[in-house]
Length: 338
Image (cartoon, rainbow, N blue to C red; front, top):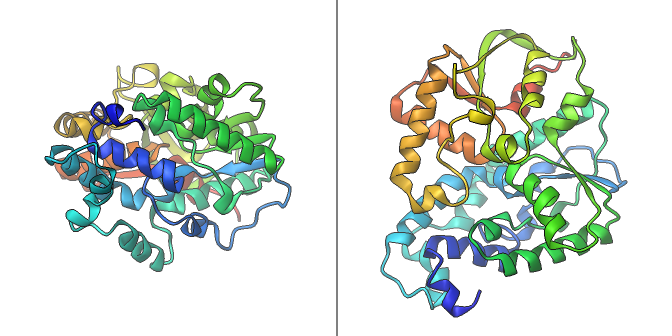
């Protein structure tokens, strides 16, 4: 990032951008930790089709501390021309990012990356075989694009495509909406000759799911929240609902007006929660009210940012009888293995 551009990017977002450039992930964590979530899972050795985990779910247990970090950094009076100062923000705030993540891994569940394990289990259950690049998986760099750092995004995309091609990747099944949109749409515009097919997890499931394959353990009413990237940017509105309606013992509940293309934003994404934290929280609480009014027992979505925002809204409104669950986890709970 050029020095004059640093004056245009809030310090917290600049911190994320520097992490992507220097450590290939939004938190700047050691790459050795990247594949920890996948330990014990079976992947095919054929990497022509790979599962793309992305940063969001892998580091979701760290997202809340990170948002706190960047929100505070944005209010701090520091010189944005000094990358050394910027890199020292976590220490200055008393936040040991790497240390927190190490403790999360020590619990043995990889934090909320259980969503990734659930997704891989569901794909295997549906006879969809995937490989995984592990520590070689590149960062999609989507935050760079949304920050307006198009030159940095293009350079990152070029490096990522080179790495995919070196492993013989021809198709990517991605689960984070932002990553999926970047890999499918933004990479196509940024990298000449880009020809790797990209599909979202829910598209693969919608194509394969059949009646009777999934049964939730008990009767439950579920409201679905459309992530902006998945619904408005990629038009994947019918597929999640087709999948939910195919799960036995599950009743789909929809807000009267705000669903599908017209779904209210949760207030997260694109750095909005960092630059406008109060408005972000207000939107999260408003969306929870809309979804809770359906009488749902569970709010399902499929985006790490939406999960974080909706959980924050639930907590603020003290609606502790409603659960926010990723769609992959809901499906994993419903696998009819009897």
